Image (tube, rainbow, N blue to C red; front, side, top):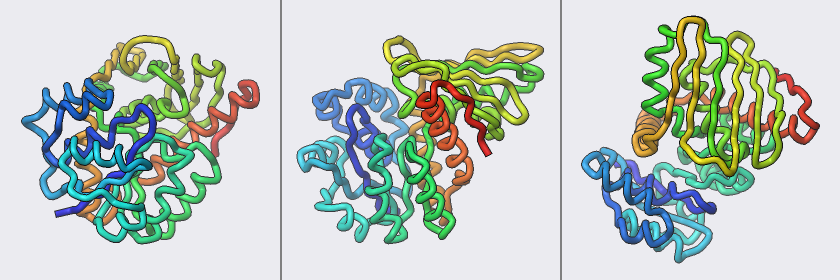
Length: 306
């Protein structure tokens, strides 16, 4: 049995509740709803027959507030509330850093990386070149670091990948989502790169503005891609794939399925002793995210990627 520690929470991110419940096979719908996440309780209830990950259990939880930790523990039947990250590192086999505030990831990951504990870090891994280099150095030194958006494992994306050949040569992809580039651009990038088998990017331009972000991505060999992240729009994450022989709309809605498959991949990785997702793929996507930020800060200048 793999004993997993889970770290929470950042504002608006319910992953400590949902991911722990998916792994442990238990959830308290009333507690999750009380904390402001009724949609999470609803999809856990709808999928209650598939809850539970064989061979793994979330046994420890830590957050910046003990009351939050107690709530997560109640909601997902977690036995131990850790007093510190260092305490958790001494008692678990693997850790999920279930926060999406990338500016804090390096500091929170450090005790586990130092202790050699396999670590999954919620998206995005980081938002700075310096922190990305630090994580890259740690990975190169043999540390177990896995990070991605669960949209890499979305069933809707896998179906699109299966049908990609019917579209002919791809000319254009448009990707649309709600919220901001910093935290949610990674969702769209992972979805697109998962479908395209992780192509090599050439350059990035940010031609929008905060709250209405538009990013243009050129590949070294592939279609033009535009990403649209608007704070105030309604709707789900959608991709439109335009080829010379056909087009396809990918409407990504099944959060539960992608979360579960992502967790299964992490657990399998721990069992096998190394991440099943190559770090280079994560690094490539984070470089695009950072380059788009730099482009916006420089008035929309095209940033070329090595």
